[in-house]
Amino acid sequence: MDYRARFLVDPLKKLSLADIDPDDTGDIDKEKAAELTATYLQRMEEDQFLLYADGRQSLLVVLQALDAAGKDGVIRHVFSAMNPQGTRVHGFKQPTPLESAHDFLWRAHAHVPAAGEVVIFNRSHYEDVLVVRVHDLVPREVWSQRYEKINAFEHLLAENGTRILKFFLHISPEEQLERFKKRLDDPRRHWKISESDYSERKFWPQYIEAYEEALVKTSTLTAPWYVIPANHKWFRNLAISQIISETLDEMGLELPPTRVNIDEIKAHYHAAVKATENKKSD
Amino acid sequence: MDYRARFLVDPLKKLSLADIDPDDTGDIDKEKAAELTATYLQRMEEDQFLLYADGRQSLLVVLQALDAAGKDGVIRHVFSAMNPQGTRVHGFKQPTPLESAHDFLWRAHAHVPAAGEVVIFNRSHYEDVLVVRVHDLVPREVWSQRYEKINAFEHLLAENGTRILKFFLHISPEEQLERFKKRLDDPRRHWKISESDYSERKFWPQYIEAYEEALVKTSTLTAPWYVIPANHKWFRNLAISQIISETLDEMGLELPPTRVNIDEIKAHYHAAVKATENKKSD
Image 1 (tube, rainbow over the protein chains, first blue to last red):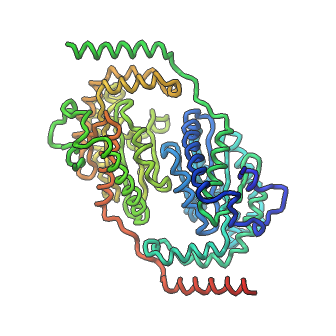
Image 2: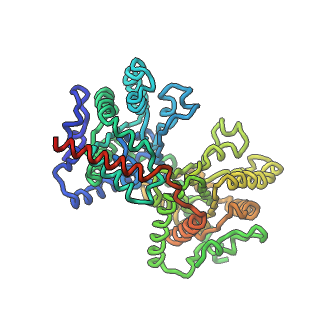
Image 3: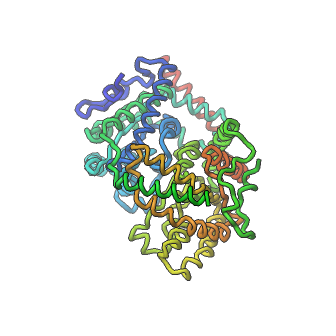
């Protein structure tokens, strides 16, 4: 099944997340999914090598979701496939004083991929139309004008050779509760629990509303949004790895031309081998 | 076998790389090595999680070697085990004009790990006592005083909670030639070949001399050097993964204390579950 077509956010239609089933697992079972995922991860690794070698384009992956929806899990399970050399994860936390002293895109711009690189944003500049909106951190007149600025920013990146893929991990409130319960039951995860994990839950409808508007207004040809059903981790990983590997496949990546005269180098090489052999027989 | 003890560079003894066999494979065969390496990689992954959670210390790994000795291979095979979130690779190339306009440690300092992070330097500030020395890029009076500056710099990092492990991948000139040949025979790798790969070979003895001095003068308790026999990739990976995982094991990493009242959160949780259930039965 073509998950790019299926999960793409259409910028011309109203998006209602309630109509997308977070339990959706396409037409596939877990076992078959694991097999396919392994294939896509393998392709991602090969394509990343090509991206790096090619050195003309780059890939930016944006991960957004409500708490416990699996951003960290996607990074661990999907992006571990890539060579750490050439792959970077950048997490967005509460802005530092220095970051706050700049426009909202400044800190994102500083971390976009260079040519040849893959960068994953764990949260992103979208927080400035999400958490900022839900908690009224800036006035409506300000955040409501940010969609256009985001599109212009992403367009700039795209024109410079950066492919942008944006994933919203879609879980149900019940699944979130279930995952919170697992954290509460596992002492090894207690250190990570903060009050806000639970207090943010009551803003669920506001977050959904903020996401629905943001996703529609910023799903563009150059930087599409995908809503990934994420109640089932195995399906989430399959859909994301398929979308990434098929996107990379399409980017026309190729090995750069040889910069040197291989025959000349071969002659050098043979001379070097000879020198070593002569040395040995000395 | 304890490879940390075996391959450590003793700062009090003259180092002669010629006396260290790059073909050394300890007391182990390839199959057993693969098994052990898998165990160490697993431990590295677990320890990295702890390092990240603990958030008080960090790990800096420095990889240095002559061309084709396997720096990229170590990154791919050993550090792929770690979660890309929390692991960064920084490659050192020819200094940019901005970098050259600063002291030689400036660019290294900018990329050292933050607390909780693992950073791998692919080449490093050591180039400033290696390639710089071999090619006379600065006068002897300048580079010969850099060992002390490097030690002071690394001491600063160590005092701030950074464990530093430095690996010199030791191959024979014959093995290098063999690997160059493989590149020449594989069209997919031709783009990567540059004239300098072959022209630098004639400086082999000068490089070895530069390494011997640098390793001895900067192998410290806080930032030890290890000379890893690297003609056999499987043994190289085993030795490095053992040294890293045993170092991490010793760092006293632990999960941070719980910041919240878990019982209170559990009460919140139960209330939330109840609310969800009531909603369903509405």
